[in-house]
Amino acid sequence: MENDSINKSPVAPPSREIALIFGKTGMGKSNYIKGYLSELHRVIILDPLDEYPAREFVEIGEMIDYLESLKPDEPFRVKSTNILNLDAMGEIVDSINDVTFIIEEAQRCLPASRQELPDSLQRIIFLGRHFGRSLVIAAQRPSIVHIAARSQWTRIVTFNLTEVGDVKWLEGTSGYDVENENDIRKLSVGDYFEITPGGFEKKRAPLYVPKRNGREEKDAVRNEWFDEIFSFAVNR
Image (cartoon, rainbow, N blue to C red; front, side, top):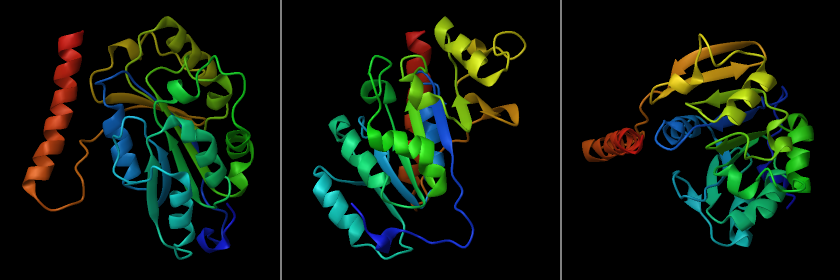
């Protein structure tokens, strides 16, 4: 797919990041991503669990037709729930400037056992900075995601992790101690560590509430958040 009509040409180079987001079920990862997503203007999502608000396409050809119909500066948020569409979606992202590609459940489509990443994803990781192509890889645990997919990060957001291999990898790749004073295994629901090349900070994910009118919808989102907390507490 190659269409200049959806490629911005900003005066300054577009900002770009490779973000890794990790967290066990019920710890707040999805809530964080929903808030993060609300700040993006041009985004393509591989969403196997159908968690995030976006225009969904079953057929990749229809997604391409839709994107090609947009005006140059028009925002978009599109997704597929089929992990078999990873390669095709990567090709789409690799043809667009100033876009974010979110891959959820990365352990399913980019498992550590996979031999190689798709060519398009490798180009996004290693060359995407020249075109403003950001990548967000989200999974429950880092060590079960392909090593190449988590090697070029510019930011790590990690909620509670307890597996030894995950904790050791995080310490090795970041250079920060997350076992003693800042014990990642003791993070509460909603708390996370944000790690960048310039620093380490403990934060708390704000409750995500869609920017829409209506108390009922806001209450539904709050209930979903409380259900996550309850589920975590029950299954501990």
